[in-house]
Length: 268
Ligand SMILES: [Zn+2]
Ligand SMILES: [Zn+2]
Image (cartoon, rainbow, N blue to C red; front, top):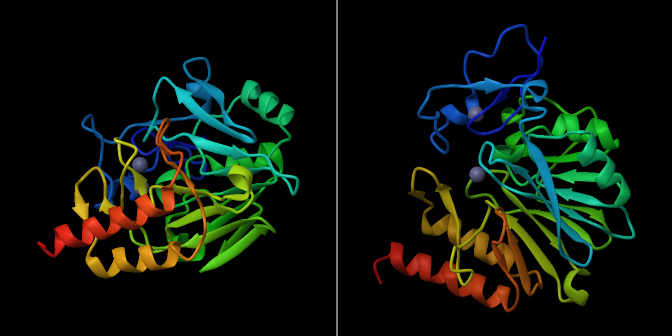
């Protein structure tokens, strides 16, 4: 029995004798089946061909990314706090070197994932570190390998006094962000992932139903995202991919970017 991993989205499935017949996440209109067709691998097969690079982004924040690129190519982020370390989002690959390095950084108490595209190998990560996993109740049908210590949540939840998860919806019904009040010397940091993506110019943000297939969200959902998130205070935003960071004035940039999106849709 092997826990097969979809090579296009990087999601690990429940162990089975043969590869699953399809990946539900890639068949969904928000994703796609790779140009070579549905391909599977396993962690056992990946070992020796991949490694994870762990780089410090700033005090108490580390990015973890697999090389060469695998799946969607996101990097997850380790946030070190006095109340326990949090892994925001997850990746498919994990090996003993990654575990040793992260244990040196204090391990992982909580794993929180923005949406199903990044569920990846959260089962394996939570097993290695004994972490509790927080996934949105509204996206639970997309869980392909259920973590043992899973907590399903809705609307808003505090992982610790200074870290909360906020459900914004849009990309997926349960799409969420992480707000760290104490980050950036208490100015606040927003971890927005695919829920609100940082533009490649690092001066704009956007949110879509499907990023790879260019399907937008309507104004009602963009307004809902904007109104919900602007109640929180933050000055910096980390997006889903390496280098996608808006270091200052991020709250204002988010507000004006989403207003610009609405104006474009309404043809103003
Ligand atoms: Zn897939
Ligand atoms: Zn996504």
